[in-house]
Amino acid sequence: MARTKDFDENEVLAKAIQLFWHKGYNATSMQDLVDALGISRSSLYDTYTDKHTLFIKALESYQLAGNEKINEIVDQSVSAKQTVIKLMEMATNELVGDKQQKGCFMVNAEVEVAPHDQEVGKLVCQNEQQMETAFFQVIKKGQQSGEIKNTQDALVLAKFIFNAVKGMQVTAKSSPDAISFGNIIRLTVAILD
Image (cartoon, rainbow, N blue to C red):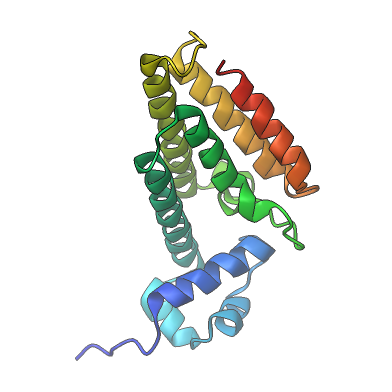
């Protein structure tokens, strides 16, 4: 008979995200995970098999939460430009004022792990595609309604804006400044005129 889990998997994943985000994948040991997650080593192995599997589950959980936020912003949109601003702010707001200057969890995984791990690389690409697609759809809709005057290809504009977001996510590791990020967002959105 299978044993029932005596822990909340969502809570464990949330703690794992924070630990991996703070320490990075390579610097996080199994003992760090046992200590931070509050579950036994055997429960950790029984549920996730190994550190890599837990890391993948943590990335998937983080990605799912991000996708839900993106969809909520796009679904509630009225103005294309305001939606672009909200998407950019969503991607950077939690980074501003972060005393630990952890940067973006997904970008950190992309830099540290993805070059050597196809599974992580695939998740990172999916995550980036989700955000880029959201920008594309909003820009295309704005161009069709006449709100966005820039006649450049909507996909090129989406890639440009996503690149600005990613730049801010990387910059957050050293200087997550709200004023600078706000200025970057305003300047980036200005290209849509």
